Length: 286
Image (cartoon, rainbow, N blue to C red):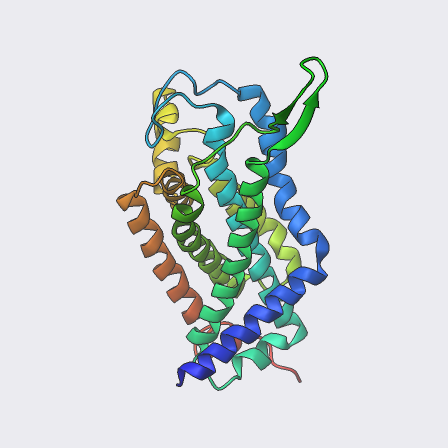
């Protein structure tokens, strides 16, 4: 196996993902509408709910908008991972997946290329969301007779955060993409993705630290939910992004996310093995 062949495969799959993404113009909008609605509507009612406590990595009191941003970045990565695996199921139904898997490259290489292409798109979407969060609009204040800045979301990060958060988003995107890649082995039809959203995506999001800190669960007497959220790999992905936004490294979260990525991807590779996975179990034409 030559690196040039791998590079061509990665380029082909990435360009295919980008082309599909550009043609589906509502895909970017749908990926951004959900977190922006949480940020603009839901967070407005809890503006100062976390101003009573200072929790790492924060050095001062924070508003709910600031706290929820890493969780919303996580839901973007989770949603994009689902969209990428959804295309895998569609390609399998249309027969494109069989052509892809017959390429003269190991299947794990093709799956890595597919995973990297989907993660690249999800990270780009996350940066678009961060740019909207930090948006500053020039506004003329007639009462003061001077120009000022209109801040829609009142969220600001250091300039270094745009770089320090990149590795965290890449690793988290790979983990969530590998999870959905593994689930795509067992999802036979596009209609089954509704059940996958209800039993995988929403529980992972709500049973995590994306919307509230874990110590709040334990303090409120929900010890069982606390341990469920602590065992949730999505929680550690959110915390990895949260600490990275402030230039800090969370070793436990990094270890959990990296280990989960390896496990999910290994299960996906075994699932797409024709001797034991999707190809062998698929019904053969008469």
